[in-house]
Amino acid sequence: MQSTLGAMKTLLLGIFAAASLHAPPFSHSISRVTAAQLPHSWHPGCPVSPARLRRVRLTYWGFDHRAHTGALVANENAVSDLVHVFSRLYAARFPIRRLQPIDAYGGKDERSLAADNTAAFNCRYVVGPGPRRWSVHAYGEAIDVNPVENPYLEAGRIHPRAGQRYLDRSNVRPGMAVRGGLLVRAFAAVGWRWGGRWTGAPDYQHFSATGG
Image (tube, rainbow, N blue to C red; front, side):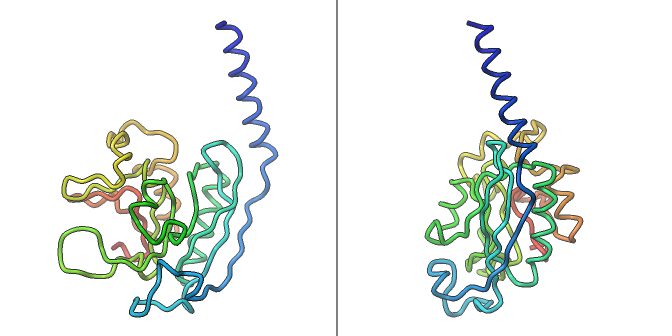
C-alpha cells in the first residue's frame, strides 16, 4: 500500500510540474466600468466615480499549481502598479486563491474574506476604531491578498475567522505575506505599503498605495 501511495504521489507531482512548465504567459487587459457594473460596491457619494475605476483581468497562479484568469477593480492610477505586481507573482508561481471583484460577494467584505478572495475596490468605511472615514479601498488604491492566509487582527477579532490557523507568522506557508517575502517585496517595489507592519492591529492581507 505504501509503495502504491508513493507512486501516486510521484505521479501527481509530475502532473503539477508539467502544468507549470506548460503554463501560459502572463496576460492582462484593462477596461472601463460603469455604475451598473458595480451594483454592490459603488453608490452615489463614494469618494471616486466609476469613471476613475478600471476592471483589470489578470492571469494568476492558483493553489492547484495551475494558471487561472481573474479580475479586480481598482483606481486608474493603481492599475500599472497592480499589473506589475501580479506579473511578478505569476512568474514566481506565488499562489492566489481567488481573484474576483467584491461585487461577486454582494459588496460584503466579510463574505469575500471568508472565501479567501483577493479584491481591491469597495466603497466602504474603515474597519476598526476611530472616527468614521473612508477606507483606502473606497478609492480603489488598496488590495487584500489571500485573506485567510493573511488575516487582519482588529480589537481581538480575526478577519476572517478561518485565518486563525495562520496566526503563527513564523510558520510560513504558501500564499502568506511575511517580512522579506516575495509578496511584500513585490508591492514594496512599486511603493505600496503593507498593513502587516502595523503594530496595534496588523492587517497581513492589506497593501495600499497610500499606507492607510
